Length: 432
Image 1 (tube, rainbow, N blue to C red):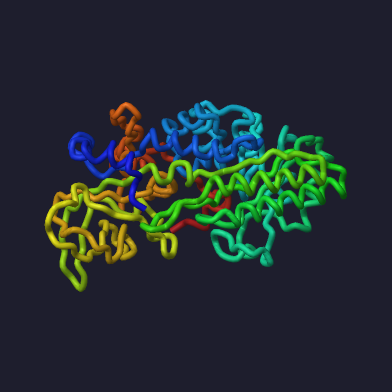
Image 2: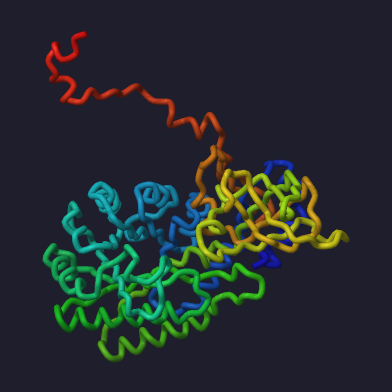
């Protein structure tokens, strides 16, 4: 949906100057909005023992991550690079939750060397752990009978998580390894705007906690409901009711405590809700084209914002900077320069009549945007800026360059292997 009134007020009057100084395209993030987002979540969950582990994959920039750590958030990581980003953000020890899949031993070793909490995605991966972590969670996939489909379709087809019938073995083996602090994790839906899927996930995990204790005598210290809360990308959609979410969570945890006497701590991974609405992609119209449709060609595209091409029905609102001018509206596709017809930031959008040089604002790019960028066609990813609370604008990631970045992996020391089968041939076999 359109950016908040506060973000608009801070950005719009200075956007021409920002674009002239830094050049386009760029993602720009609103520091004040991000901090306010953390505060809203914290207020909604007041008096609930919880910890938010921001999903680093949503916005992997250390300048943003440091501010979130300063607000008390942990970092949820799923790769070596994200562990390094957590380091740079100041997250240490149990400030870090390593939650990966199809994981290799070196990745587990890197997480354990940081004393991070570890979330295991498959029973067989226990054998890949070089040592017993201080805190170990298992990811649950409730399966095809669960009422909410997962982010990639029915849960039976999703690659993440253990089946329910594998959990008892998993917790028993973890206890045998000497792990005393255990938890369970699940994420069963993505980008939903009501709280029921999250509350349903929490109830499922509390049931697992009860069953695990009844069968094994092992209490679970943590229940991690993952991420999945969405943001209202389309105009007219309503944001998630965080206060209602807080009330629902409190009721479920209180009921569990009354019936069992145990108080597991709640973990969340709500990256999109915290930063998503507080970023925009600013791009400039460089061509007007009239084909079977009207097209506005811009200097960005899906290499900087993949969601519209990757997910069916994904949408980002688009507005025109200074769009109060009198020209009548027109319907256009807003397109990039890739040799790929899906390279469209907006399809059949009604906008003020566009001209070359106009600045377009693509809203809600504060999460899962530049992070998903790529270099197909040799198109380079843009810069990132931070609109600071004092009104200044800071470069927090430079734009990519052809020689410095795109061609950098083509500069290396020669390394040629002669396969053993060729080295062992007799001289006569190659004689002319």
